[in-house]
Image: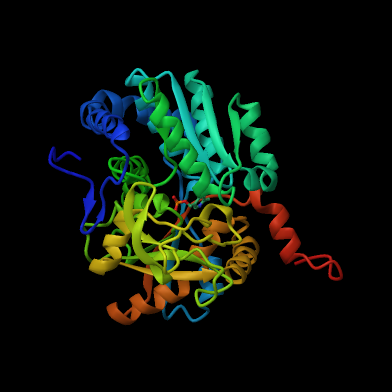
Length: 409
Ligand SMILES: *Cc1c(COP(=O)(O)O)cnc(C)c1O
């Protein structure tokens, strides 16, 4: 978007499939990105908040015991580094985007923020940013999710946000997003819609990728300092795709760094219960943008399934669709069971409990390293986007991993 001509297409994907009423708002936001967000003064203010409030730069942790647990011989996986977004305020990378968008909205003169949320993580991040900047916050959430994610509903309310329970459709994330778009159409003059991932109509995928690119920029600097070289591979989980694109942006132009995204395979990509549109979906339009998605033969959007609420979305950001088609990034998938097993392995080798989303990336580290080491002829150095911590998933983890008889996992 430093190019004035950038129209939001990533190859054949992206764009802006919206009603005419939203075009004005999206144009206004596109202008704000180039005229406010990209200015040095804004970046300096944002950097200050990221360092004094969010806790950036996040550490790059070498995971030696995990590396040896995944590959005892060390023949495929050499050194393994974790980019620790779990140590951000609110426990995941989502705050990078929320703080940036709400600060931008404030500079644009907007007086009200709306957001959609599935698991509640983006809702909590947005409510946090709104409390920090003193703006009212309205979060749309499917009725089903409100019931499933009670702790995050409580957090949002405590932070002063209003949570609006959505009763349409499947009463989950995609319906919440539709409802938020409807609100935006009505209140566009005063309201900024804070989208939670690198998806949606132009300029959102680019705006969110830029705000998350701090992950990759830091990781690149840190790994150069630690190893004297770029990594052989970078790998991250993909829901809407924001933490992955944020990490990838640090390495996209360095062709020697192979990029891997990991989608949620749920019960398996050959079953109807998964959330892997890049692996097993088709091309279509969802939430204002063209990309891969899960739909039936009539084009009806299908319900996604993943044990991790943050990956449970039937679409994916358009830049990932383009990176897949061009082969610049490879997309793999991990099942619910594989993610759960990966949680236990890293908890017991490194003393870090990951978010279930993050665990999907962890589950495919060895496969990515094996593929890359084959190509480069030596053990691979890998950087993992460690998108979030597992506190929010404790109930799920305990239900699946701790057997009552043994009393321990
Ligand atoms: C929301 C979330 C994700 C998935 O979102 P992306 O936009 O694909 O990054 C991944 N990890 C964690 C911890 C999350 O909270």
